[in-house]
Image (cartoon, rainbow over all chains, first blue to last red; front, side, top):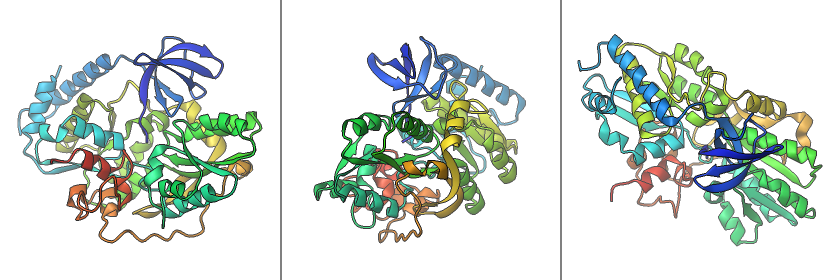
Length: 80
Length: 349
């Protein structure tokens, strides 16, 4: 039930916005966030619940960079 | 930088103490199957599902009340599709429709506003079920109802909060070593509330996204913490989750809802685990307080043990034999986010 999908804000009108979700244009409510045109957002049950901060690729790179730090400062990596 | 290949190798070759990790989000359960995560990690790292589906833990008495409303003259129940096949004490909403009940499926609670305005002679009841991801949207709905002076729409709520449920599991189930914290619930509530649990129960809580890489990285982080006897909260879904959560959404929730004790199907009463409409907004409530919950699980059904992470669904004697999505005996088989339903869909033929 907590499924959310990403989309891009393409038009804003009051509490509502048009979002592009994989080339489908949908109208959503934006009352729970502060957004601007061009923002990537998470949409759940007809409402934007979050503005995404980074590109997903950037996030995954950051995540694996942090794991490298973990591996460097612990005794686990490579020593099972 | 660590590569994905290195992470997979480390996790596959892990040969330390057995580790049991609970995910408390149905979307994580689905993603673990979709990405074949179990095949990529050591059998000594066990992934087990928790109470991650609000539909599955909704009381039978709540379903019965929805059915009663659907059968009343000039009434109509509005609901997400997930709720249609969950059985009450006698029927589910699909069966109620078949005997004349008026039930309509919506994708967004906010669609109810237009429907109520266009059909002023019908009294609508929205089946407001969900965790914190969905509750702010019901707050927006109430705001819209106020703005449009809508009198023919009310909410029957069964809104649950995840922290008390995870606390309950930490308090009562000893064999879970760590948790994958639910990404989309954390979008709303943030991750700071997990700090208290990590300190009190000495377990790692890692907030994870829903891509395969997210989940593998989160498992690696958990194993790293356990190996180093750490119990920290770590946010690994930084793209979407912040420490404080969505402040606007939290304020909207707080404006219209207050905490209450609640019944979880398969578990029982959990203190302060519900969000109910505040008394000053009672005109929008369709009577969401229940005096008594009488539940008797279907014979042989082990949904309780599944929800509490004691067994995997395929260890239940009814799973895929008597209990299937088309003929669900237990609630966890019904919803697309239910643990048994997900295991059934991904079972080996």
